[in-house]
Image (cartoon, rainbow, N blue to C red; front, side, top):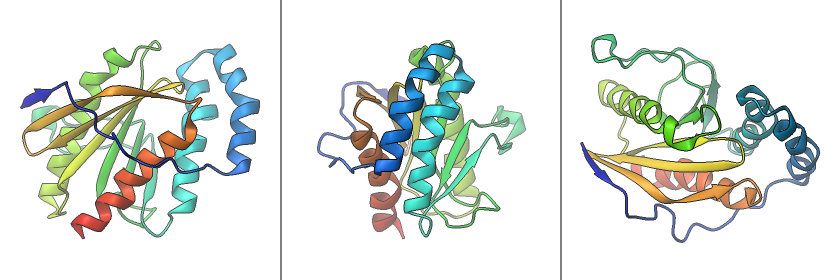
Length: 189
């Protein structure tokens, strides 16, 4: 696999305003998540609410899975529990079409989450090939809750976005998630 580190993945993605309820929730609970300062708190109080709003607002296009086993190829080590997977399907009971995998950064370190994220992306790519899902790209995201780093696998090339995105700009993060889920759907179905 060829690694490409020098490109912006989302140079002109429009922001998508999050709901007033999510804004209120984040303003109340982000300080608590940061004070508790554990992966679990950041996941529950920052990451999950954002992904939940994506799911609720686009329930006909995506499904959201948290903490599920994703066993694609044990021989290649492509098995284990994923933090989050977003699927390009409205089927909320069965994972059918993974397009984004999300990894909670370990010890608040984005860089340390990259190998796990890449493995999950490769597993998603292989899963889609095995199930004849026409996905041009599979995306990954490593998040501390406050920082979000996106990756993309397309064919045999792995792109690591030069930018990081921050929870202080949740509309930008939501815009990127929508672009990946909805924008990609328009091109591949």
